[in-house]
Image (cartoon, each protein chain N blue to C red):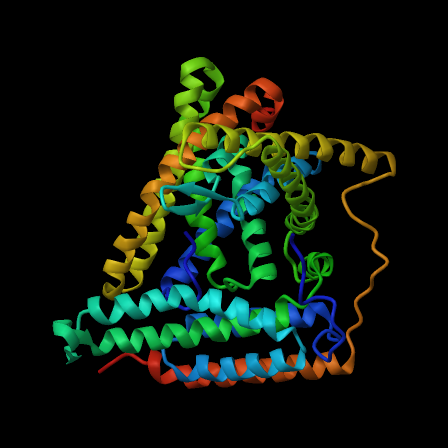
Length: 202
Length: 255
């Protein structure tokens, strides 16, 4: 899912930061201190989810959950994903600071997009909510994979095949994420419906 | 489950002002990542490595993380020489190995490791709470720094909660497999972790309000910018400048 440091070309790195910074600024503007705690929880869940491996056939994949984040947080997914990725860089040193912008945008933009597309479905409940939740999880990972592959392809002709390999690796993850988002949203709607309404207050 | 293995060491690097370390790591990693030639990343790799030695980390940890970082790069070494367009230099087993592909894989390895060692020595040595403060000091919005510090706080809570629920599931005979039951269990697990986290966040926020929280934490920790920090920043600045100078030929338009 993440692109490691050193791969992308300068225009892609700088463009990624510009896009991520505008998304974060937008997400922060709507966020007050009372809701930061709720966002921090989801952001921490996103971090922990990346440590959870779910078996799929002989292999296993780790959860991404950016669709679930989008469904719950809306535009606040931008700052939430940025801090989670920064924390990963701090604690595991997998990536540096240059790549943070591109990775944030690639994960957060699909989350926010899914929020605006499927928000009405999630509110209707019943089968609408289930299919909306599935599509949130499914599409968010699909779009993230496409953006990641796109950032690689934009960085040079040489990465074309690598980008295709990365996109193919996302296919099984999409289905898992769709199913888990569906189940998690269903659970939340029963147990804590107010959590799904966090971004609706304003 | 989640630790800061590099933060609690006494070393010359850890003695530096977190603001200076954050600024230096920003300048060095950005320069390395944006470079086109090999000279600048090589210089920054050397500097990052020296800083890592000065920071006296557990070398077991360094080795493990370095292997994780280079794992993805190993994939590129397999793919790029075979798929990048350009003149072939060898054809082992009938596979065409291209020169630009090899060069690119080498450059990426250099850049990624330069960034890795700089982040390891300069950024990961800062305690997370101090980094939150340092971020605010360098002009990053206070809300973002606040979110960062709280996310870190909750990562531990959620990781513990998750471990506890995994244990509960295991006690009831849960074995992960590729089936419906597994996915339903994981779905409930994720949602339950969120629910408990959410309830806890509300309790914490109410407790903070009761103690007069007004949007910022009065911290007992004060940053001290000493002469050593000034010297360190000067050195980091000179290295960045030298790296940029090395980069100039690569950015000059080709004629």
